[in-house]
Length: 342
Image 1 (tube, rainbow, N blue to C red):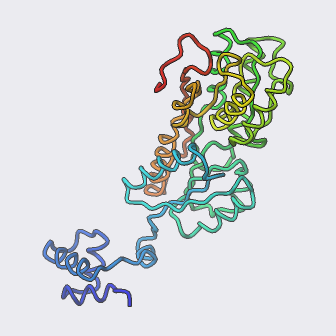
Image 2 (cartoon, rainbow, N blue to C red):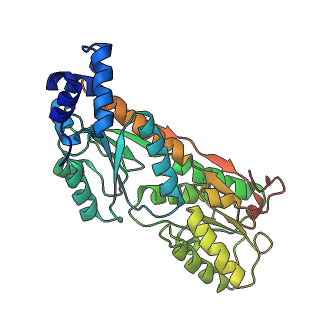
Image 3 (cartoon, helix red, strand yellow):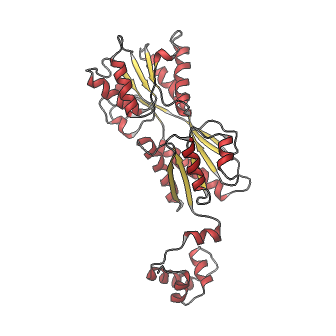
């Protein structure tokens, strides 16, 4: 049978209340009593019951995280940032994927309600009505890279538009004129903002080349869709000067397909990405990309949520925009390309 708090109290020769106060960190017990209780708990290998503790503290010490996917370096780095900040606060994570489906996102959020102290959510389906239908008003939530919801909650978003605009400007500055883009999935906030940055900057810098459908290949952020886009590029009668993939995973898939067709980057065309996943610097040629500090975004989201949980009254909701950084490597053909480890 599991060891109970009564067993610890008996072994330490103190009251159950003294054991509870000690294990909950209360300052109302003497040092002698605290040492007795801790020694007894260690000897009996007592594990506090989280459900019982949550009843007395109204906290589960657990944070829910709902993401559209768990596959790939972007999400692993994001989770790493959340986990690092959570461990500093002795918090646990409950992580789920919606697989890009609104129904699954709603089911994951509802399943976590009552089990977590707050939620970090990244989903293209989140808006005010979605939150109203699936979340209790009192549950703190921080949104990542989603549309403006009109809901009273804090949010963090990458400057996707600005990052895409900076990349197009760089490609134009080094002499590229025929530029194509591999997009991310439709109805995805990040994808839409990166495409908007591409199209509007093309129209501004290269009038007449406004990045409409003839300059766009459809992808879904996966390596496979990048590979298919690379196959489509190989079939073109005239290659573009440069290809801007809306994320690094698609750029890597595209690079592989181009290589299979005997094309070399950047000799035959430039290729660039977005995110700066760890692999981007180690492929050949190293990938020019837009750096998103994924682990920092995860850490900031957790810290923002933890602050709101600890200060439920009068907490001002915040919207933070995280700036991006252009990282120039050899894949774009720039004479100022940095080294492999830039």
